Amino acid sequence: IQKVLIGFEDELGTATIYTGDARDLKIESGTIDGIIFSPPYSFAIDYLKNDEYHLNYLGVDIDELRQSMIGLRGRSLQQKYDIYVRDMDLVLSECSRVLKPGRVCSIVVGTNNNQLSKIFNVHPKEVTGIDEVLVQAGKKHGMSLVRKIERQITGMANAMRTEFIVMLQKD
Image (tube, rainbow, N blue to C red; front, side, top):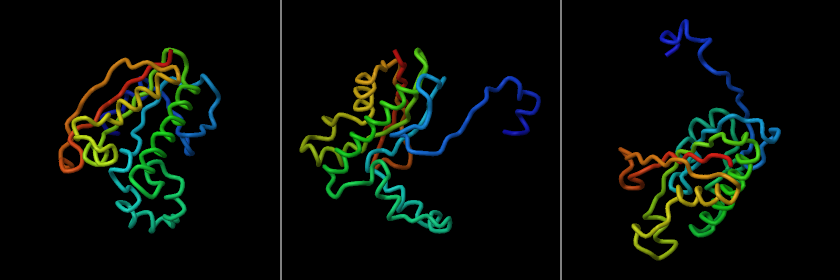
């Protein structure tokens, strides 16, 4: 990619990368031109367990990190879901706060309908997807859905078949 971009550097935009907690952004309100992120797919994937080897190598305290991560806190599936929804509401509140009016927040997210159907005691096809939960949270915080793109997932069909790119525009 670097070789292909040689000579085109002036055409690319600039970016600033921040490290922190998306539930409490240390960014001035109304200053961001665009946001793109892929939050945890609720509790469908234990990212810490999946990356434990690398995190241990880096000296990360996995138990401490688990206590702060979105999607991994709570004992029961219901608790994990409730905390996840609350956390993602905070994230979208912060995204709306820092975005300039008319700018877009793009989110790549999927839903494990089988897990959620067990929580709500409904058929997996009746589950409200995480994508829709995020659209509703965005509306609550002054962002409107401008587009939702569905994409089939390969390699995870037992847990998730589809993910969405949700594009929310700040009003």
